[in-house]
Length: 345
Figure 1 (cartoon, one colour):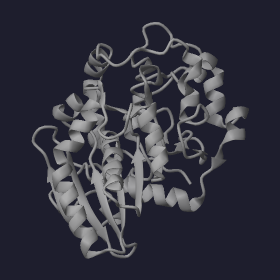
Figure 2 (cartoon, one colour; figure 1 turned 120 degrees about the horizontal axis):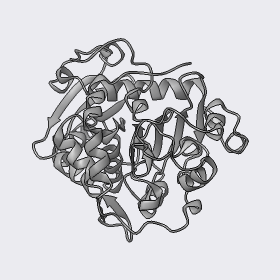
Figure 3 (cartoon, one colour; figure 1 turned 90 degrees about the vertical axis):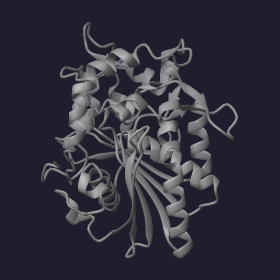
Figure 4 (cartoon, helix red, strand yellow; figure 1 turned 180 degrees about the vertical axis):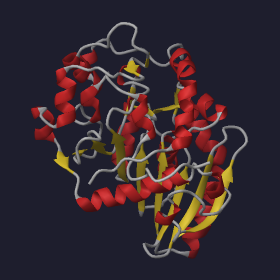
């Protein structure tokens, strides 16, 4: 089952790539690790080799690498033996599940949906949901919806990804700040600020819905920046006692350091993280700057194959999307799952 979709509004961020490359390289983070091979991406970079000179990059990951070595090709075409031994293929049910939540994440890029109406190219996939609340903040321009699925008994929070300058300011604020309540955990300051900007509205609405529907599950999803904020929202709801909770992200950047990633794993939250082909964004900020992913990774290996490769739940490994580092491509960030049927204006 091939699943690629076009998030047309996200593609407008391509205009900001020169800014992204320039600013992020100057952002103070943490001390870079000396031994790159000790990190999941470092292992891949050691195997694949460095980027050619003059390649445009962010956090040492290519923005649009069109040429790559045979080792990367092996990872993409499914002949990289080490990865095959450490991974499995996604089931049809898992792909269907991921496709649905990805459609939701795509639909919130449409202004009408943020306005409370299911008017968008792919709204036929989500129109059965009742939109309970929408939000649009002033400081970080965080947008999204809270919806209810009475068939599946779910309350669903959907965070929109980066569209505006305010969103990109948040993305670029990649300083690692202390994460409240977890010793030694550090978090991307811009993502934390984005969550705090909309937390009050989201929390009060979700609490009200769960109170009225105590047998419903809470699901949180988002693409790109929306995925990063979804992670932080899930952690707070879990800390507040919501146990029936699931998290689905697409093209999500890393949100914090290894200690924070381990904390996410320790919570036991169901966390499925989708990555498309050579998407640059899930590789930034990079391991060498102290950032780590958690969750169960679902990697759509390429648009030429139906394979969705799954790395086990836990801290990220070198066997899925990391296996192609640093030969990434921002073009793959705008395409996720089955959403090629229209343009959101």
